[in-house]
Image 1 (spheres, rainbow, N blue to C red):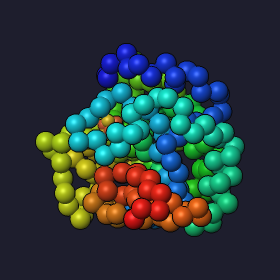
Image 2 (image 1 turned 180 degrees about the vertical axis):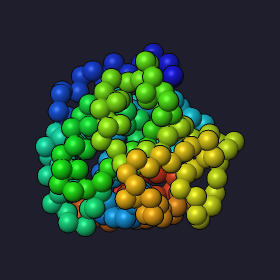
Image 3 (image 1 turned 90 degrees about the vertical axis):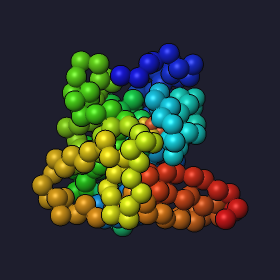
Image 4 (image 1 turned 60 degrees about the horizontal axis):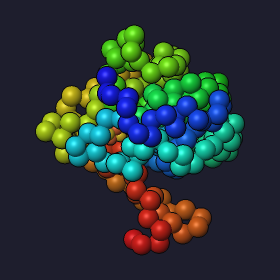
Length: 211
Ligand code: SF4
């Protein structure tokens, strides 16, 4: 269990119910889980893993507050999205709102995957973040465990970034769809001209017209 005395951690409790504090969002990613999917990077993680691919996601300060309703509409309005992936940051610190979102997109026929720095055992244990079991109940796939630099895998076929991480497939329909690779990279060009580079170990980098 990570320490919870990070200076910005208390900001987590300022997020209104039904909202998420996110770092970023893309539609139609093909390198963050099975098939073509929306990706939500949440803001806030306590682990500070050496070699973390998203250190800008560590702070719990408000970055972008978005209502679950708005995100659900956005995900479902892009018919390329056949699923949603939660990355971060640590998705399970915002488990109640992500569970709401996951339930609604699953009712609409999409599948849901999440990364977590917690292990599955920790998420089921007594020190799990609030709402962890509710979110687990809505997941089709969980990639668990923190990134450990000394155990890093750089392979065009690996589903995970370090060999301590595990792929838990809760939905048997997805067992033959585990085709992404943690070393793949994808570039999304947004309407305002900015670009998001994602896929390399779950990374999200935002560039404003500088590629
Ligand atoms: S690698 Fe993942 S768990 Fe570790 S600090 Fe970065 S976002 Fe958090």
